[in-house]
Length: 439
Ligand code: SAM
Ligand code: SF4
Image (cartoon, rainbow, N blue to C red):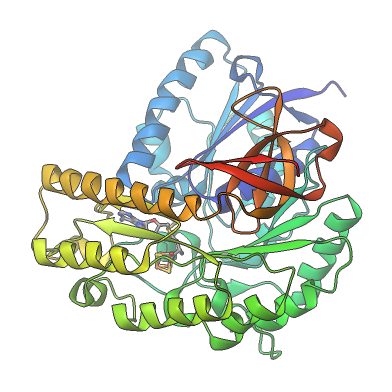
């Protein structure tokens, strides 16, 4: 069978990146080989995101360009998956005429079947059924050649219903994977040379709740640390409300657990946090950060913030700025609130003007840049252990590695260091990276 070319473009979060890896693996069994060149593709899949309006817009513009390719090559097959596909279902075909198939967040395992039906029958297909949940996270995607780290999905969906968020509607209820299955997958990855794994879930702290076998996130980590070959463990994302003292202790107890936590706070105003349905106060959040920093003084803390949530006053916004000054995050992902259909926030009064949202966002980002630089500068002159990931993006002659605290370090070194854990001395700090030297 002649190999056909597959082009996958991924929008959005790490879950989507990992879902795309699984799609590529499933379709390799049907004779499709990944290409970086969209123009050479026989099959194009866009793995979409709809967390904010901007993400959805990007998908539509890309589909416009792909439609032109289809006019030139009518045999080209075009599919869309991910959150926007789950949201629109059959409506996607009405909006975008060139699509052959639409598949939802729980239907990835059906891909080979869908593509084969499109080829045979040349009719439009939609698969967005929600009942086959765990099937879609049990595909083993072997890592790419020379990869040193890999993602492992430990749970799907979310039950939190934060007022602004579409995830619970588009990814379904929270469901954890049995721990034996997760451990087996990580063992396989370790045998293939993977040194670092990132455990994925929308709220990893509630791992195990639906399993009824006594497992929880901390007990899962304690099992993973025993797997030989795995040197580093990361996870994303944890919800501040569910960050348990046991998990906080784990950072101090388990050497392999990287000293970084992404803990999205969303706002520094208790009033806004309540409107958002987040389930914690600013004080409770800060107490958890203090506890983390007391046990692991150099732990790096990153977060997400939304500005311009409906009803956010200038005072609420100022409280977010005050909280940032107090905590001094290592880095922050910040977003303008984007109204999403069907969410509770859509019905809230007090919508903030777009220009005002932009002003708030820009001022907040300027402050964060100062904090990031300050936090990074604290590392100058210090020895840091890196896992060397590959060549640097900045220069052909440099290598790039990450510290346990998730910071990028560029340094001069030989290619055979890739995949190794090694010490470098930090010589210079920037906002987005650090410069290091072999001692
Ligand atoms: N489950 C994770 C959590 O609770 O932190 C992350 C979910 S989401 C994919 C990533 C981030 O997108 C959120 O933390 C939030 O800051 C942002 N986000 C989600 N919905 C949004 C919206 N409607 N407008 C703006 N930002 C949004
Ligand atoms: Fe969305 Fe909240 Fe669930 Fe995160 S915890 S995915 S923000 S509903």
